[in-house]
Image (cartoon, rainbow, N blue to C red; front, side):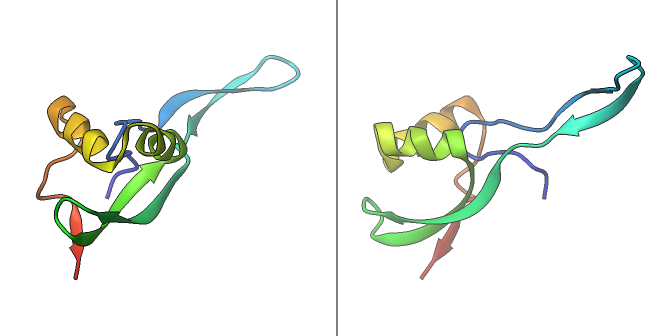
Length: 86
């Protein structure tokens, strides 16, 4: 599974390590991702999402249902990708 947030769509960026002598080598800037369980009140079930820290802040700010609808609308995740637990 790729390192992409299901809420914000953030993914790893590519950049350079720059040494003291200004030599540049490629590196990746990974996203702060983790799996988190949420209680989805509208469906009365628990779901698991792969979320970044910014995605968590968005869920806290606008709510889980609004954040999921916005993510599906923007194409960051699909309803089939969301893992339902019990």
